[in-house]
Amino acid sequence: MALILPRIEEKSQVAIIGAGLAGLSCASALTKAGMQVKVFEKSRGLAGRMSTRKGDGWQCDHGARYFTARDPAFQNQLAIWLRQGIAAQWDTPIGVYENQAWQSSKPSDPRYVGTPWMTSPAQHLAKPLDIHQSHTITQINRAQQQWLLHTAEHGLLEYKPDWVILAVPAPQALALSQAIDPAIAALHGQAKTEGCWTMMLRFNEEIIMPFEAAFINEGILSWVARNNAKPQRTGEEVWVIHGQSQWSQDQIDADPQTIAPQMIAAFIAIGGKAPAEYSIHRWRYASSDPAYQPRFHCDLERGIGYCGDWLHGGRVEGAWLSGHALANTIIAAR
Image 1 (cartoon, one colour):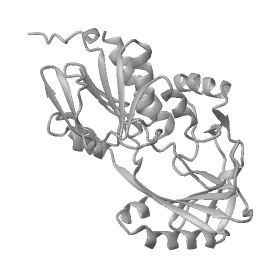
Image 2 (cartoon, rainbow, N blue to C red; image 1 turned 90 degrees about the vertical axis):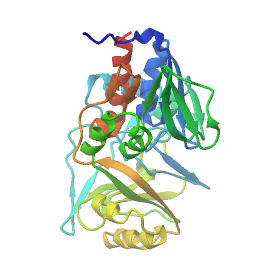
Image 3 (tube, rainbow, N blue to C red; image 1 turned 120 degrees about the horizontal axis):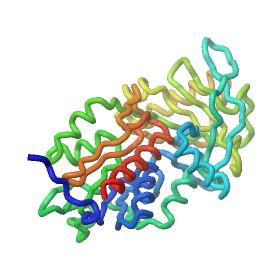
């Protein structure tokens, strides 16, 4: 007997867990299609790894370095951001440090950043949305064709949507849904997520290096960049440095105060200086390697879906496309 799916138009209420770019992209498309969408985010801020840390007189993009646009759908979205001044092309020459020598990299695609902060595109998407921050979803259950959402801060929510979408890293999606959705185990098993230690280094003087941004292909660092070199950045001299992925993963549970001196020493070794002040951040789920490409996962019968950069190549563009494609699949089934 053929399976008869419930009509999606009867499933008008959607809960999206996670307000990174994938979740916001999905929420934006579903909202424009007339569905009632609520986004739940455990943090006080938005944008996930498209983050900017701000201090007294300084700012620093300590998550995504930049992004590219290869897919026509994302290029169209980027064109809107460019017209509205919330993104700009980043033309700073980028170098490569390898075998104790510097050389220029040869980019195949233009690089872009949010302006005046990396969070700006996400904030643009979030403006018309119903977003509930400081809502840590700890449990989801299915009962009578609706989803029950439990939070650490507010207990069981009154909102009982027909759809739940997990726009969070693979390990967090697994923890939430493995007891109720067998599909997540296979998805998680194919996605190798790695962490990243990141430092923001503030200086009292301009730091001169061969390149203001560079890939580091030896030692414990993978990337260094002068945040002030990006368009519309203001404030004191700040550099961001990222740990190499395998090294970061091996040290992911280490004390930050044991990690910081190692990363600063590595920065000095390639021509940098010791900072006047620093901040350190642990991205527990920073990248997917090798790139996983199912794009998204959707169960139309049960009303559950997954999106995120871990499902579509691990990039900023992949995150937006994943959420956008999931939303379009749900809308097309109406």
